[in-house]
Length: 172
Image (cartoon, rainbow, N blue to C red; front, side):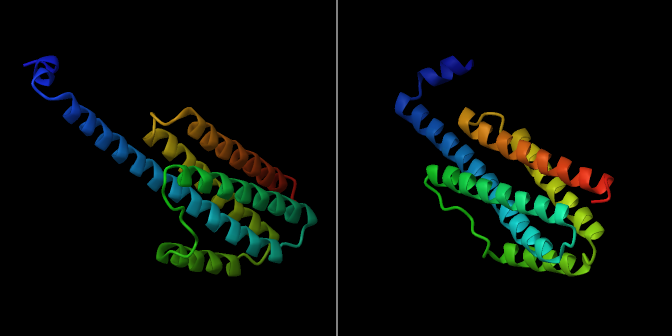
């Protein structure tokens, strides 16, 4: 029996209810993944603040400061988008965030030179880029304005990645 024939026997209210459930499920997945991006911004900001304290090169310090501005901008934007779905945005105090921050602090302690700070910063931004790509791959049917936010985040991460890579190539 064709779908149109099956639907003929199902009340329209039931069909609408099923569609609402599907939309809520999609929204929940979007919010979950937005919160993951937000946690990444929180971790990046915390890590780069630590690196800023340790960095010796003025050029590296300037790039880290710019990176912190990028993280802050996107923390605000992602929080706003999550709230627009009627959900609470993740903060950096969750148990997984605490464990991740501890791991990052260990990396920070081990990053005892500008070269190591630069290498770890590049890896961190690369992880952020991967997270953006994963979000886009998983969510093909998101509102255009949300897709714009993710592409903006990706573009900013790419710029920071280029800046860090350029510093590395030029021996900071």
